[in-house]
Length: 446
Image 1 (tube, one colour):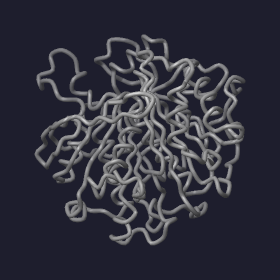
Image 2 (image 1 turned 90 degrees about the vertical axis):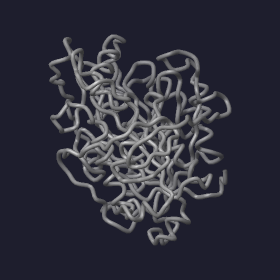
Image 3 (image 1 turned 45 degrees about the vertical axis):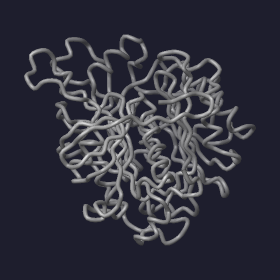
Image 4 (image 1 turned 90 degrees about the horizontal axis):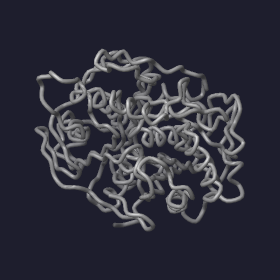
C-alpha cells in the first residue's frame, strides 16, 4: 500500500430525517433546532416501540435502507461529476456499512411468503442499480460500520485497487433493533440528548451518508481538482477493538484513545472540530469526553464539538458516514454550526459544545476528527482535512460544482438486486465472494 497517495473526497450525499440532500442537512445543522422523533406505525410490532427519527418517507416496507443509499449515492456521484460511462471506464468499487443491512423483508413476521432475504447486500444492490461490474464490500460491524467502510475505501485507493470508490453507510427502521435497545433500557423517552446532565439513552434515526473517494491524481486527470484545496482529503483512518464487553465500552477507553491518536498522527493541535460518537447514553458520553482529553491534550476543552446525533438521532451503521459528511460540510463552509441547545451540560463531560452561534474554524486548524463506536468494541476514527474554505455560501465537495442536493422528502428509488458478501465482485446481476480483514496495532478488527 502506498501511504503517499493522497485520497480526496470529490462527492458527498446524504439522506436524513430532515430530508434528502447534503444542503438540506447543512441547513438543519445551522438552524440548530430540535426535531422531536417519531412513533413508528408498525402493525407487526405487537409491542410499544420507542421513538425513532424517521426519514420523511412513509413506506416502511423492505428496501428502505437501499433506497436511502441509492439517493445519497446519486447525489454524491452528481457532486463528483461522475456518470454511468465515466464509472464504467474507471476501476470502481462500492463499500457500504450498516448495522442491520436491509432487514425489512425478514422482519415482516410469520406468514410472509417471500422467503428469507440476505440482509447485507447494500453494496451489491447499489452496484447493480448503477450497472457496474465492481468490487463490493458490505460491512456489518455495528455502529462503526460506516467508518470502516470509508477506511476500506481509502485503502483500496492507496493500494491501487480502485480508481473511484463509492463508500458510506445506510440504516433504516428495524423493529428488531428498536426492541433490543428497549430491552437494554438504553432508549431516551424524549430525544437523543448527548452530553446533557439528565440524558437517558439514545434515540435511533434513519439515513444514509455517501462519499465518492479517489486519488488526487485521478481527480486531476478527469479535470475536477484544479488546486490542492479543491476537495477535502481523507488523511487519517484508524480502527481498534476493545474485545472487552458485548455492549459496553472499555472502562479505560484505551483502544478508543489509540484509534484517535493513530488517525490524528503527530499533529493533534491542528484539529479544528470533532464530530463525536456521542450517543446520549450515560457511560459513552463520559468515556468519550475523557478519551478526547487524552487524545487532544491540553487544548481538548477548547476544540468545538458538533454533536450530530442530537440533530439526527443515532443512525446506526450510517452514523460514521453521516458524521463524515457533516465534517466535509464544516470544512466546506469553514465554521462549526451551533449545537442543538443543551438544557444543562453534564459536568463530567468537559467538552466544548458551541451554543447559539457558529464558531469559525481557526487558521491552521482545518482538520475534523470523526469518531464512531459499535457493540463488540468496534472503534473507528477518521480525519478529514481541507485548505481554504469556500466561504459561507458553500460550494461543491470538489469546490467547483454546485451540489445536487434537494430539500424536502425522499422519493422512491428502487434498490436494485443481487446479494453480496464482503469483498465480492458483482456485476449488474449480483454475486458474492470472500471476506475483508484488517488488523490495527492494539486490537484486531475483522
